[in-house]
Amino acid sequence: MTAVGANVQNLLADGVVFPESPRWHRDRLWFSDVYDFALKVVDLAGQSRVVTAVPGRPAGLGTLPDGRMLMATAIERVVYAVTDDGSMEVVADLSSQATGLLNDMVVDAQGRGYVGDTGFNVAAGEPFVPGRTWLVASGREPEVVAEDMHLPNGCAISTDGRTLYVAETFAHRISRFAIDDAGHLADRRVHAELPSRPDGLCLDAEDHLWVAMVQDGEFVRVDPAGAIVERVPSPEPFALACVLGGHDRDQLFLCSADTSLERLRAGDSRGCVDYLPVPVPGAGRP
Image (cartoon, rainbow, N blue to C red):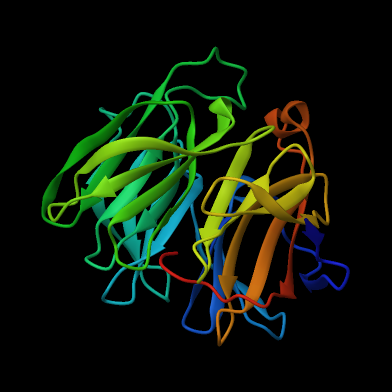
């Protein structure tokens, strides 16, 4: 096992509360600053701005074929398409159907979004209830495509578009599904059993997953057999999410926060976005 990350460089030093679901798009990093209730972008020079305020609390993100950003809202439980100037269009309203909060999301090359429904509100201290994964797309009725998900979280799609990886945070595992032509999921399998709770994740060109281990304070690289082969220490105690981006997709962006579940309930968090170069570039989606 190797350790990288000695040269982690700070990308965005302040102004971030709880960064999640980072996505590299149009030469900028987009992310949900969850407890600042805002969708934000930052470029490699560290210049950041708020794309739009999100009173319903931003959650998962994914890029659409037309260049807009698909965004799930946790509390409102609506999925929007968002433009660069912050205008929003409703794609799917799950407010009467979701059983928990909307969480992380990945969008495939056809513009279909796979969004997690937690089943319960962990930050509010509610008891565990299994969640689901929804399939949403413009002009299509939302569908539940996976049940009994133990807090569906970070997700990624393989380069060929045929495999979905989902972190099940409360089960300490990453599951994978086969994706058919209609976007439905089948052949559910455990891809990796992990020592603690995984959060956000992304895929690289060697079919390894980079995974944020939220309460361990580290990001790990998991090989196709499910073994941890590299570790990167998190800049802050909570390792929240990661994505491979930059011009050649060879920069690993790390989202982390100094907080706890108890502090989050009061909105108390201090986050950051850092990055470091890695030898294997990103692949698939996000």
